[in-house]
Amino acid sequence: MPTKGFDTLIAGLHGLGGQRVWSLMISLFGDLAQAPNQQIDGPVLSAIMHGLRVKPEAARVALHRLRNDDWITSQKSGRISQHSLTKRGRAESAAANPRIYADPRVTSTRWTLALTEDTAAEQAAEMEQRGFTQLTPVCLLVPLMLRPRRTC
Image (cartoon, rainbow, N blue to C red; front, side):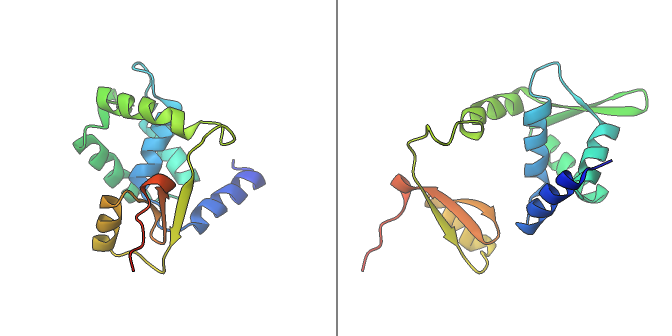
């Protein structure tokens, strides 16, 4: 059963708005099942997604998409599906680990945070080409050294 602290953290996550379920799910696999022999059983994955207030149909779509994109593989063991990162998924997760778990006091990278009222899909694609990463529909991030200079 979730604790009050957990509920507070989940409320903060939902307050960001526009969370991509596939991104949340791949983060989960990167944290809990990154080794080649590690997997997450379907009922466990469903319980975690439920605890994060992700609708079952959204979780199924995300899992399907991640399988199609060669991030996750699934296999049946009796009546239970077992999901694990593919070789590519493990490599991508391992490559992201130094950035995700770095001590923020040690990093020398400076960042620019851009807040918008809303970012349409074509605007988001243009911003990604400029080096921005879309965190939420209204929040984008870019390393300071990649920030486009204003020309007047």
